Length: 105
Image 1 (tube, one colour):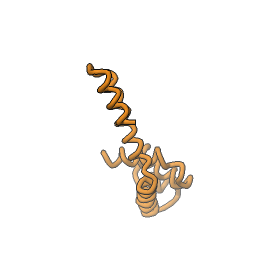
Image 2 (cartoon, one colour):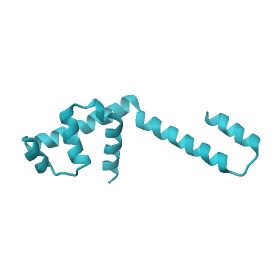
Image 3 (cartoon, rainbow, N blue to C red):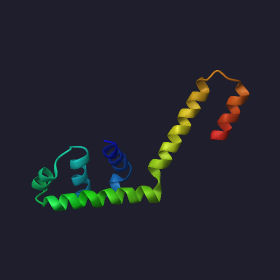
Image 4 (spheres, one colour):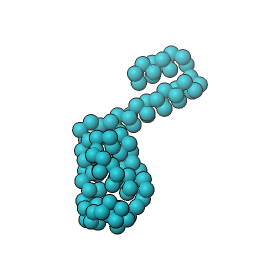
């Protein structure tokens, strides 16, 4: 399940960089949960071609993340925002809050 979620996240960030054909096949697998045979029949290609395209697209998306790191940076920013939200609701001294906020920024 975690791999499917990771595939979806990578696709959300980098899917537009794929070809239309790659997007169609990948969406059929990740979002529509179709089998290789169903996709092959629908697109008039072999099951092996579908399998190879999925594997290749996975590698392409992972390579984009390795090079650009958008998902990683998004996660870091999200954690900082959550921390800032926690600081603004915590019962503590105003000075300490200001110092922690400065550190986060």
